[in-house]
Image 1 (cartoon, rainbow, N blue to C red):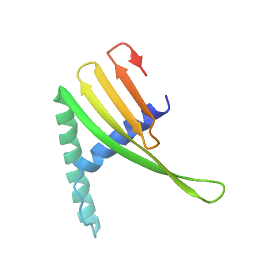
Image 2: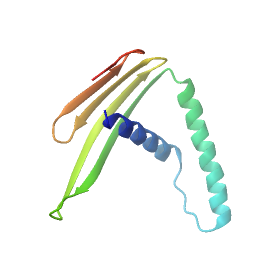
Image 3: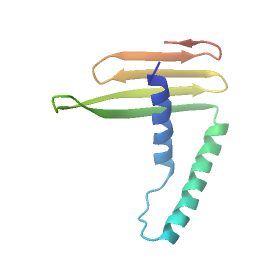
Image 4: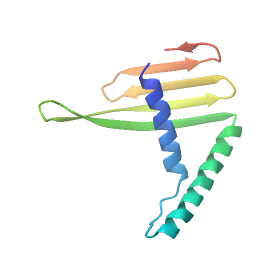
Length: 112
């Protein structure tokens, strides 16, 4: 069950990166203005997600693992999140190595 918190974090990070516009910042005033704009964009995203009844998100994530031999291995997965409020969640996970895993939540029970 360690993967679920990582997926939630990945979903949050992806949501934040999609909601916040990229800007070129060069001095403190621009940083403060950008922070205010970013907070406003993030709040707008949260407001939208907060009232949305159905939501689907696809997350493509990966990470590198340095082996004792010095070799770098890359691992990853693609997860599809389907949320139907107030109490339904389905997550389909496809690992790069071909394994698959599904999570279902019906409001009272989590099934793997």
